[in-house]
Amino acid sequence: MISHSEYILLSIKSSFFDYISSQARPYSRHAAEYAVSCLQSYLSAEYVSFFKRKEDQYLLIAASSHSYHTVPFRQKRSLIERTESRVDLMLSEGFLLSVTEKEHVFDEDFYRLLIKECSLFLAHFQRLQKKTDMEKNYQELYALTKRLHATMNKDEVLNQFIFSLQKLFPDYLFYLFLSHDSDSRHKLPVKEFDYEGTGSASAMEAYLTGEIKWDAPESANQVILYAPLKGNQGIYGVVEVTQQNRSELDEDETMMTASLAEAAGHAYENAKLYEQSKKLVSDLQLINETSHKLNKNLRLIDTMTYMSDRIIRSFSADETGFFYTSSEGGTRMLPGSTSFFQTEGADFYLRLAENRVRQELEGVFIGDLKVKDAAFSSLIAIPMVQRDELKGFAVILHRNPYAFTFEMFKLMQSLIHHSTLALMNSMLREELELLVITDHLTKLYSRNYLDDSVQHSLKTDSQGVFILMDIDDFKTVNDTHGHQTGDDILIQVAGIIMNSITKSDVGARWGGEELAVYLPQADPRYGIELANRIVDSVQNETFPSVTISCGVAHWTAEEPESLKRMIRRADQALYKAKENGKNCAVFYEESEVMHETS
Image 1 (cartoon, rainbow, N blue to C red):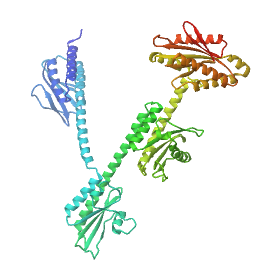
Image 2 (image 1 turned 90 degrees about the horizontal axis):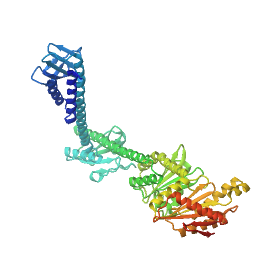
Image 3 (image 1 turned 90 degrees about the vertical axis):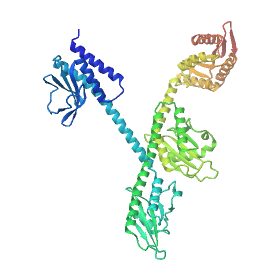
């Protein structure tokens, strides 16, 4: 049996748990108020109060009645302190629990456990409160950042700058000399810098030195001020202020104009850096998303198709091709390349890109090919390099000249560089998968792969043909010509089989000198004809000449079949072919065996 104290603690703990489960309010004050009510009830206490330390005292945050509101803070305070009928309990997070007992019922061990439970209860709500406050801070920070970003526009900075000057000095004329292009330049009074020296020398000097310059042509009776738009990292332009009917500058107006120009320069720089940072974030996001997608162990065709689509979509390219280069110097196109690279028209661009990439192992950026009748004017070629070895390259084309910027070129380089490992892994994975399902000598499929293919066909197709083949007197070939010649015969026969069947058919090495072919959705007549063609081809095309015997079995969905039973029927037909003198194909039927000679 549990004691009365243990029962009280369990009841308090249970009540705390129920409150945590049912209350969505993350405020520790509400929790403290509940705890006061709960503790007063279970402890049968006269008063219960919660305090929170603030500087040199404890402030009341919840109480069962209007008792004292503060408790003096002492640096060395015991975990449990008794004063007459009152017990003060030091909780975690700076809380103090004060219990005024009606009678002395509970010992120190009980209060120690109570401290633990109350501390855990209040700490839970403290954490929720902090989380809520932090979320509010983030929301406020986001709202502030959003407002700031709304003004981070280079053209808007210039517009506001000119508008402010015109408002301050409505009788003056203002023009901007800008060092960089602006999309809204047509909305502003802009002049071009004359870099050949025939324009305003003072404007160019102000731009180069970052200092205020001025002219006062006597014949024009005016003063022209040139104030640079200067930031911390550079000078972004010059404002020209023309003051009519003046012979000298007004010092206050000059200082105000210079201050505005400097402020505009800093604002323009901040907006420019902001735009650059957004572009950088966008570029990094593109690289990150692409790398993340490619690292999902995609098949090669899925990997390359994704890369091609991403480049065309992100850079508005017309054609994209990917090519693998072997160590022997060969080049083959990878899946996912656009159809243009399968035409003869692509040869010129492919040769140009490959020669440059192989020679320099560097990217190729051509803004205008300037080739007569060329379908594409812009070309980018980027090598795929791993451990300083060329593994392949990408070619990106556009019909218009200068369709790609240098920034696009650098971003494509980074994209291909970060993707090369994933691309090579996809190729290696595909090669390994091919090794697993193929026989290393004949390059036919393995028996396991054939079994899986037949099992799948039995479930999904309406019919099929299984052909089991055996090279006649193969032991004699090995004994007479040697095992190397025997291997060469196997390779020759495998080559004849692969040239005789379609892509949907499965040719496999069954074991030793036995080979097999499965023809999904084939009828008996086609199966027998194919078997006879292979028999004839083997006899006529192998050297030294050998023959084969074939057993042919057919199945239909009307008569459910198992792989084991179909193999047994084909094996029986093969045995019959051997009995009939070899070098022939025999079709198995339940009632009789139909013999088809080659």
